[in-house]
Length: 388
Image (cartoon, rainbow, N blue to C red; front, side, top):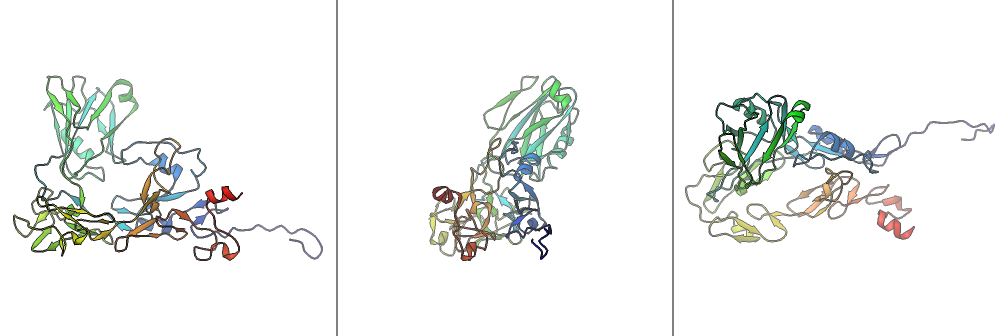
């Protein structure tokens, strides 16, 4: 700034950032509402460094231009959404589909010393030591947030989890249903140098123990439907609102068709038989009812156990775990991970600063309604390239 006597007076300026951006130079897209207190706000770099994806795979994201520029919420297990504002509801097995099996994964540890952890859906178990027995392994696995109950058995009844004469560990998931990702083992240096841990989870692979016993893994065939497909989820509190239509009603189950405390809608409270699909009009007139399982197959644009919920569009994700080393934003997510779906209208409600049917566009300065303050054109990178 020139003063009256033509001397320079140097001032230190502060950037006033457009909504959603922070940093001394407004160089980072921040988390909305600090994740509501129900998650951690991490850069893309830190997301890759400190967490794993749902398959427990780990990738690096260090050199890409947005590694330190885009931040997002990693929600606590009970929550989801770009700002962690939505509660997860219990899932469960549909009570009208029968003859299904639980998932059984196998662990084979050949070692005398050392320890390992088993990752599941990106979360680690407690440390499992080579000398641990059944009870310790069960407790270590049930410490994982997404696992509530497993049955652990050894093919060598008096054995330990790791042996040089092979003992096969079978882990049956008693309360987690559907197609489950396999365990991923991470060994300490001692075990990595002198032993190995192998997982079987594909329903085909088998292991043979020291006595010649063959143990085969098993794929789960039960559903893992939100509210057991017999209710709708209230995302404001994570409670299932169970259906009660046309004389058929449902309530909380034990996961096996009986009354229980899961909070799903997997128990038939109206009797032993069901005669209709959910909905005041079957499938809310937006789907086709199966005459055997009384499950609705919803028409395009509709979802939910009674086909009463509208679906929202998907877009390339703004914030999600890398798909491989140094690559991200190639997966399609609901509302591009920058909005929430209004199931009554099928419209994405975008976080401030984003717009588009799937919240796929970032706004320009001045806001969505007054882009560039009326003194310019708001263009995406593709449009800029054409006009440069």
